[in-house]
Image 1 (cartoon, rainbow, N blue to C red):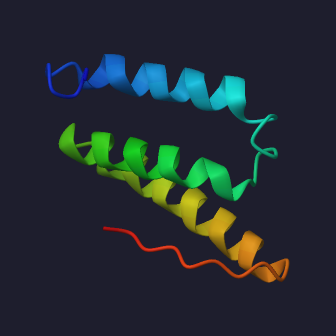
Image 2 (image 1 turned 180 degrees about the vertical axis):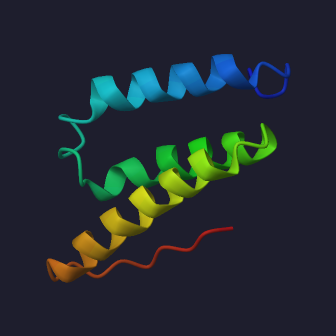
Length: 80
């Protein structure tokens, strides 16, 4: 909703706050369930032309995916 209203910074703040609050409930820092939030943050930073920050979120998402996959849990996850 905030992205639609062109408040990218406000939307990013809400997403970061939400991820921080839910991180433990979702399985910790390297949880696969954090991936959607990381991808959304990456997209918001791309829109905001903060490509280095977007790259950091994509790296974090990919790292969590690799860690999840390495632990023997196979998922069918596709980025659109």
